[in-house]
Image (tube, rainbow, N blue to C red; front, side):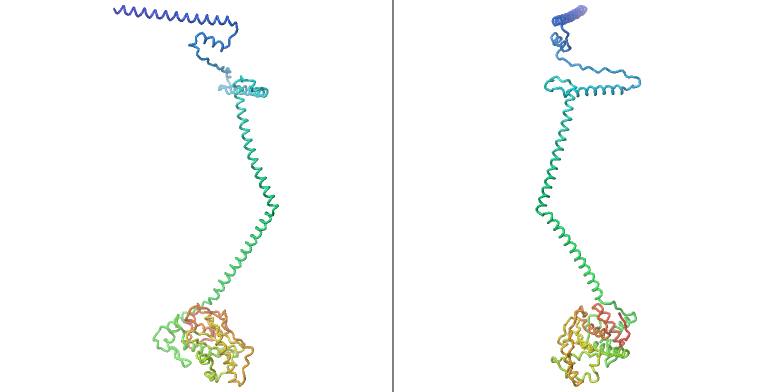
Length: 448
């Protein structure tokens, strides 16, 4: 049974093989017959395309779409000196360039519309030329537009300049610049002058502060002992019929108002020094009234009777200067000075009071004194009444007026300029303590 099945299958396979061979021979003969028939009918040489069409007509199932075969350039044999084929590639490139040059030379003579079948290489060259020319034209257009804009801008500026020139705007702008420059220079000059003035004022302020005055360490120790070294009732100096106690000196401490006893004692020391100095020089001395003189002579407005006996042994008209401390209602001290040789009565007020009433009283007193002592009227012609001047040193508080009055008299008696200031009052208070305890002021004292 198995053998029969195997025999049957072998027979079927052999039959199949025969049929396939017969079919193949039949198709080949048909194609050969068809091709031979077509060749004989056309009696012409077929191109590849025509031949493909012939095959396609005979066996459409096999020749469905025609494929284009591109010819490969023939490879040149590589010489032994060029194993990598560099020279061959160069030759190929040169050949391509030669063909390109030929093609480029022929393009201007060709009409694009008349050559629908341009070869592939020519189409590539044409596209490249178009692309290059397009880029060049785009660059040219952009450059032309930019330059056109620049030219238009320059023309607008020139037109504006012409208009400004014709209207005088440029001249006006130039004049405005000149004026502004001149104003700036003037302002700088004014500022420089202001700075110079400020500097000068600062220097003047420093100068106006007065000199730096100090006592020696020994004198400082003596002053401390006089103010705080014992009982307040202890008498430290006895002179001019006055007992100077430690308690009396307390008014010379900082911030205290000077009393008339200390001022009168100091004026008596000034008179003593003045007599000694002027006697040595052989010149007229000065006279120093005490603080009660002006109170008496100005009592009720004016009262010569109260003071007519104050100068029994003194010839005021032979003096160089006459110093009068002035107590104004027990609240303020000032100084009046009669400059006999200069015919001037001047008022010195550390609070810048004019002193007009005081000056008139003193001038009237001189007339009565001259009549009383000389028996003749006083010639007031040429006499000057001078109120307190702006350059008179001024106090900076409410308690140093007595100190300023004493220093006015001290400096003027020596014909010194009034260079002291408020800042020096602390020194002068301690100096006054020292000189009061000592009972005299040295002729040759130099504290500046």
